[in-house]
Length: 431
Ligand code: XUL
Ligand code: CO
Image 1 (cartoon, protein in one colour):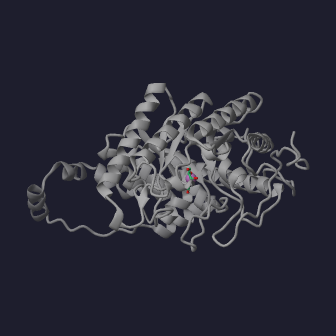
Image 2 (cartoon, rainbow, N blue to C red):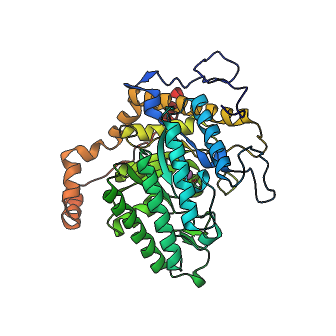
Image 3 (cartoon, protein in one colour):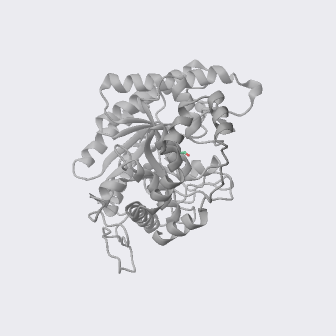
């Protein structure tokens, strides 16, 4: 045991507790035919909890962690503390970027050796822990070599470096028994068209993603390949702006059956959408995969990655997920970080515990809404005309015959209420 969480005991479900406990999340509670833990599939994101120093654009590190530094011993200490936190929280999954878990070497080969050593160290820890890998990913955005993109870089050698990095991260994810592999196009975008060949860059990104999918099949990785859309940040114009944009991209490069979406609340907000919109878009296109759960500030205009704390919003999100039967390989990854003044070990635990409770409350509300059925009955009633023989024949017809029928039948459609307030009142009964 390390000293880091020395005063903190494992959390349990204890609704009456006034201390550190779960008040709504009971992993063993069976809801809609399954244990909560198996529905929600919570994951801790290594980068925010263990690698982020607490900086902002006006100030550097605020956190002082005993594992900060560039040696392998410190990387192992970081892994020790991380697995202690997974145990305290009893989370079934975690997620990493290569750069979160190993020190950067002074060559590609040295970084790879560091990475492989840490992967083996973590696999050793996983033998005595319940926590599995939800997904692995490559950090192709922090180092200055990626300042002009990874796959979309004007320099083919950066493409090659990035491809080799993703190959190694996919190998490690596979070796760890990971359930998905994620690609977030961190700097796959551009700042100014004046120096950018947009057509070429999109083709490079398409080929890169095809190679990742080819490699997944080559090594027999059975998990899902997930793309995580995000607009505007860090590049002014990101090629993977939102779910609909990425779907067009997948179609163009023949990948629509191969790649699903990892959808993040904060990214949806930055794209000018709601979280549930992005989820509904993905489920309707058959490309929903997983969730990066967090909460964005609605005013700031950048990605604040706060822990979720809005039960109605989370309920509407899980309602969309439940409509397609819940997660398969995906889960709820807390891509969320402490505020930089939250310095103490207990803040890390409280942030996650609170988030798990918020998700549990939202999820139970979503299940209750689904079991109640009124929302779906009212939606079906709104579209019932399309199920009638007249409605069906409209879509099988053409403009000429439709125009003739509108005249001959003397059609005179009457507007009907959309009932939004009534529907919102129904939701409010459950959240
Ligand atoms: C960045 C972001 C990433 C991805 C993984 O906004 O969400 O942490 O989730 O690279
Ligand atoms: Co994310």
